[in-house]
Image 1 (cartoon, rainbow, N blue to C red):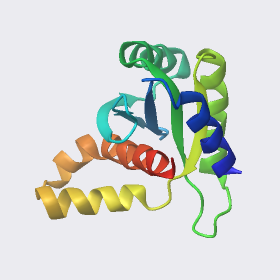
Image 2 (image 1 turned 90 degrees about the vertical axis):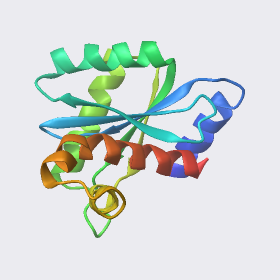
Image 3 (image 1 turned 120 degrees about the vertical axis):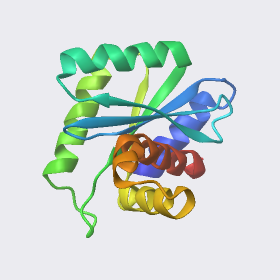
Length: 154
């Protein structure tokens, strides 16, 4: 099913220069990443506080407009056995409500298993960042990993 969604997005955005936005949903922080206009490279962009959707959705809308975003890819935190748990349900509900708040963008989900762990290891290995510095950027780096997975699926 996931491939069908990405095939649809690929066809729809094949000839446009719309960027894609990646979101690492969390109950405290929301990591945000953005693609280049060619949708080849994902880059960390922002970390937003998940205060309330009333406050959060206008912030995301502003990014969507500023960056000329056509689709939002939300990481789906599946359990290791591939099943959806409570956290995945919350991410899906977030995506459903975000789609209502910003109806002119496409919303898709992608398996995000292991992205936070991979991102943290990369920040330690490649950048030797302290725990405090890693914490400050981990969510947006994870969002970039989520978005890159989607871009690579194209």
